[in-house]
Image (tube, rainbow, N blue to C red; front, top):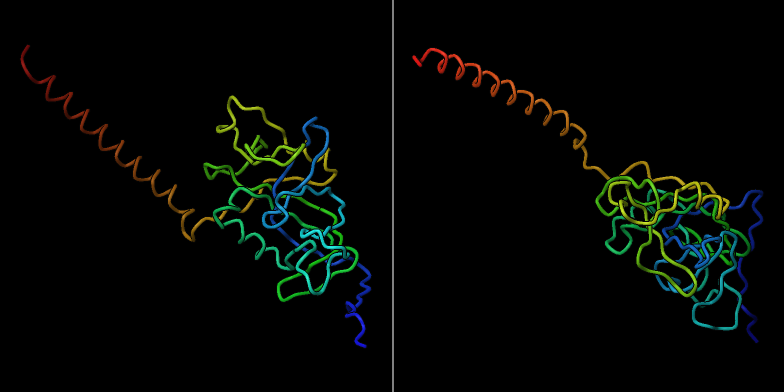
Amino acid sequence: MIGRRRLPEERPGVAPVGYKVAGLLLSADGDRAAFAGVSIGRSRAYEVDAEAHCAYGRRHAPPAPRCDCGFYSLADRAEARALMCVTEYRHAALLRVDVLGRYIRYERGFRSGRQRVASVWVGACRCGNPAELLVDAGTGVVGRRGLIGSCTGCAVGRVGLSFGSYARLADVPVAADASPYVPRGEGDLVPQLVAEVTLLQARLDRCQEQLGRLLGADPE
């Protein structure tokens, strides 16, 4: 008789760290923060400290070796952040999580039975500028509204929630993603444009001065 396949046990002194993208949620009464997955778990909200449940309703404790249930996270922050370039994840948040309980290592990270959110970085505004607050995303799950990052300009006329308020509800640090994806060399574009505008303005001033002299020389 073949026995059940057992997961290898690791007993690290410190919980492994993982990174993932997720949606931000706010309870209908506005007093609880939560998160949602971006793939098979997008319809299920989870708290800051959460235990996984099999998304297929099977009666086993995640992560089961012969199932793909559990909390997924990547070991490399840069790799997780690169997912925010994918169209459907462009306005998701980046989470740093502590991998807790039983977990399975795979080639890119972890699949665990528990996790604890440790930090949140909010994605860019829809206009591309860094987010400065959170606004209603127009999405959600039962009892919870979805939130996305917004700059103050795009948030005019909309109800917003500060990062600090969300951080207090979640009891984790919340900040904007401070390193937006900018093509190499793009940072030199603005100074170059300023220099060109300055040169054009100087030429315009000179033309106006010459025109004034010509008009002043004509007899009245």
